[in-house]
Image (cartoon, rainbow, N blue to C red; front, top):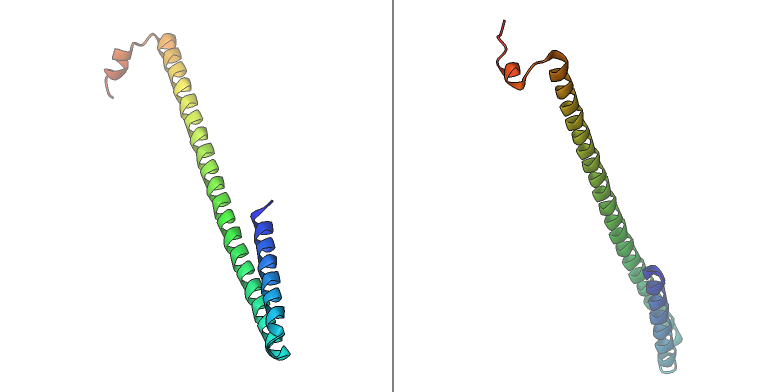
Amino acid sequence: MSSVTVLVAVAVVVAAAAAAAVVVVAVAVDVIVVLVVVVVVVVVAMVVVVVVVVVVVELLVSLESERERRWKAEQAARRMADSLQELRHKGEHSSKTLHHRRGISELEIFTLPSK
């Protein structure tokens, strides 16, 4: 059962209990006063339910957006790590190939005369 369903059920029970209390009071008090009390209780219960539902929905949306943001950051980090590893691998391969093709040692690469 979702939290919204539970909140609505609680609000209905509270409104029903308030209505029952109003009916009991109606025997001793004028009917107009009872009707006003019933309307006020129902309106207050509805406002409480709406506020609670809005707060819960906002919380769920913020949690979901945080998860999505975290997931996107993890994906970007993975892509970056994969790219770096691929570049390293290509760099090592091309460096070895260059040395073998030209017969240049690593020491000679760093000591080539400048023009």
